[in-house]
Length: 423
Image 1 (tube, rainbow, N blue to C red):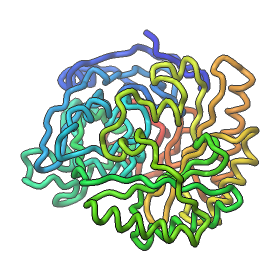
Image 2: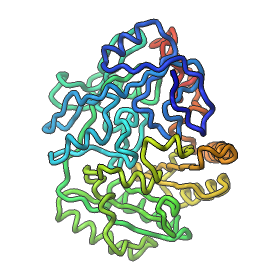
Image 3: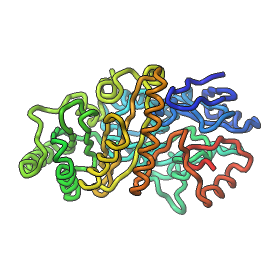
Image 4: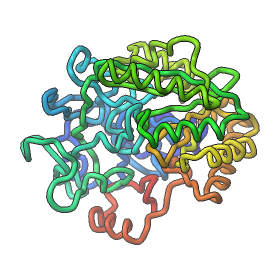
């Protein structure tokens, strides 16, 4: 059997593709004696390999058929979802309720579990913070719950007594995750996204102003900054989201607009696009317009076939000087300026999503993008800013402790080497 091969990556030889529909079927597959199982959720891990395994000869375990929301508790604020549950599916269940989910700006067709296990970034917080517990199938076929699970206590908290094991299974290949408890956010009374623009020459000062506002809690650590290519504008664009009680949002808006007059940040002349505001509010456009317009320019199911895409995702100190240095490194490494989105993680850190897009059917463009990505990895690592998410052509190397844990959990190599501890 075959799986779609993104043009940007070396083709892989895949032994077979299995598509279970239940967690019980996953247990049966794990116990079947197969080796080199490579689980995927929906396969939409664009720019990092999509559904491809790291090496040849793997058996792809496509979990998109596990698509049930097993539980939804609006009072305690959690949902139990399977790998095939998409952002869009959960959003539809939550419309009109007192809860919202921490969405990413990627397609509504992407898997919640897939991105959470990658430690992706939502519009309100890092996706790892959404995870309260996991259901995992270990290499010997046992199904276990780690972290918090319904029935263990009344309060859904990721940390219980003793060692917390949930994140042993994020960015790892130690098990198959067949379900997760994800935490939901209270629906705010009001959501307002303030757009600010600034020129490239003011990048360092503008970033320092945003950091100051974040440190002083004038704004939450949810700001997104787009370079001119990503913003599709002449300058940089920052989205600052304020949410909560209407009076608080109004007061903070007034304070920020006043503070902006003493910075390079220029308040937008009009309200932010409603599609953007709705995503922050937990009620995104069902047509995926933000994703198509600002991110890829085409529907999710046409990306790998029509668009070559490579992603580089480093984490940097949240400072104007460092972000300006990153911009210089990007210019030096890339033949043309790629789309860059900066996600504020907290008062000290900001990640970069650097998207190298190119025609999928142009071999010279593929080669040029691969070379640019190599240069980005080398240049940023030299500054102490390695990628926090890896692609299938550049897997990480396990530390000695990680290797010992992997050997203890999977001594017979039931699971294929992953991108974060490949050897």
